[in-house]
Amino acid sequence: MAFENSAVRTVIEVLHDGERGFRSLGEELKDPTAKSYFMEESATRGRFASELESALSSATGENISEGGTASGTIHRVWGDLKAKMGGSDHTLLETAEQGEDAAKKAYEEVLRKDDVPAPVVSILRKQQGHILTSHDKVKAMRDATAA
Image 1 (cartoon, rainbow, N blue to C red):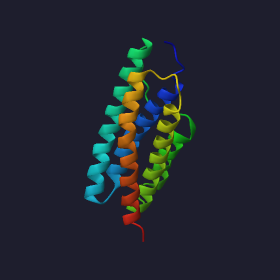
Image 2 (tube, one colour):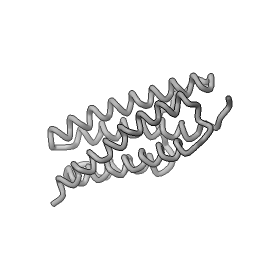
Image 3 (cartoon, rainbow, N blue to C red):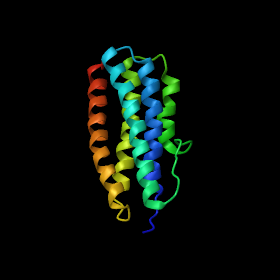
């Protein structure tokens, strides 16, 4: 079954961007609990990207290896991180929440498509639950650091 897989590839790119973004933020955060969470989440995003790359490769017969994106707002959201280095944990957590918003949107968009193979949809739905939980956790961390 042939399908247009650009939406799945976008999710993979978002995950790679998130992997780098969480790691960069984790290195800058002062709160040790937040720092630890961000480093763990970086690894989770990398694992999620690999799972989807493997599932997409199986579904298409292509070798899928997305390295992240140099395009669009998704990359720029995490790119804003560079400009905010040295900021407070609240500022860094605001940046992380913007990245989480982009991840949520990418999952919502791909799961609206009706031509994504069932095994890929299954992985996306499982991961989406984690992404939503992570978004809420990052938002709560951000709110807790508000002045």
